[in-house]
Image 1 (tube, rainbow, N blue to C red):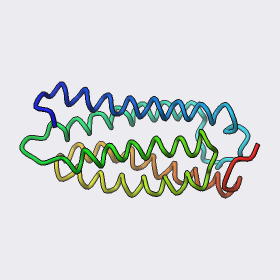
Image 2: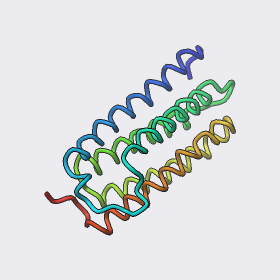
Image 3: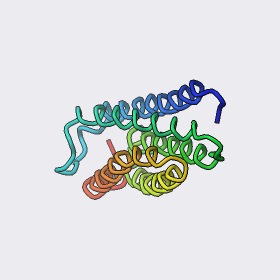
Length: 162
């Protein structure tokens, strides 16, 4: 993207940091307002697991995106837009699920995010195999989140009502 590898890394880092910050902010809203009150799957990890897992996943996202941005002599416009779209979908899910308590809509957004991530992995693979492999834990966690979101819908209905 940029001719300078440091600028590519900075762009990758800032994109993921903004995503992480917004997601964290929306998550806190839900955690403070309703999350402890709703019924969840028996497979829901303890709350402490989520920031640890997401920290690792965000590092992997930065590294994967940076690898693609630094690909030489390859057009990467599709991969860049897909990655940015993926981050926007992740923010949207956090907003819909945690900030608004719209569980079914959150599930729909997660399904779209799952497909977008599968396409992103395929597109990254065309540019850099390692970058694509770095996205596999992210995909696995999103699929697990999709299951967890679905159980929230099944156990609590479409929306949190205080």
